[in-house]
Image (cartoon, rainbow, N blue to C red; front, side, top):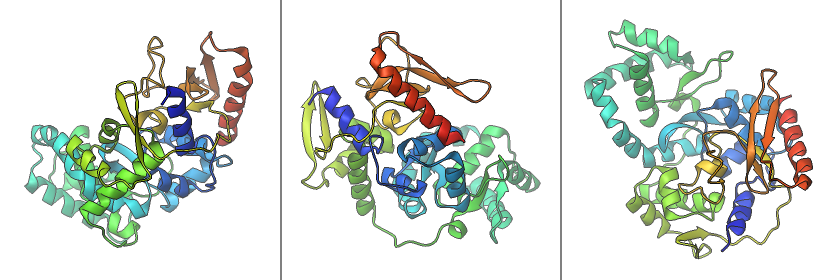
Length: 340
């Protein structure tokens, strides 16, 4: 398997090279979870994959609760759909708690503190109320719980992981919290084994070709847990080596419907879904998924950023053929249309 074949199939599976989806929640459901600590950029990550959507469309879907934003899988924000949030939390929260253990201890956050803070938070939000983090800070401090910014963040994260909190609608530009059980309708619970098998199959269907190590990195699961999930994959998934790496995927014969040239937002799943990103990035460019990347024909082809007028400015690599410039111009136009 050649690197260009891997990238072509990823563009297809990640819906960048063409999609039949028309609504934000359809795309997020397909992707299972999309990293979203940079909220504006995360909205563009959805718009990038569903032509015709605008920033306003995704903002409405978020405020209506069709998509949610919460800490899940790794200690960072993700977009998820209501139907997936509970089983994802149940499957992966233990790993995030383990990673946060040192911080819990440093901030003297033990079971007693979490029980008290949870009681105060539930009382403040029950009845369908939505409050900002600042408002909940006031509630906790009145309840004699110390809340420096880092400690407060850990308390909120802990309650998200335990299925108490999720995102509410925005209050202006401020994010709010809601009680998960009030904001998300009940769904039929599934076993841990079913959750692991489902997450594994959906990861490799949406991100493949990918490696076992990629899946472990993205999901936050241990290598042993990830391998147990891979062992449940249906026979339609195959394994093929490229260099020293073994990739798992469902073969794709469909040719891309759209150009593989686009403005990739920071933390986009096209990059962040994989532990090994060598086939995407130019080793000498010094860029990564932690920056805005201009992707040309599926690979890093430069950078982009927003200027003070909120307009995208691209800096292509000088080595790019001039024939690619029209594709880049089209990518910029598409971003502008999204932001209107």
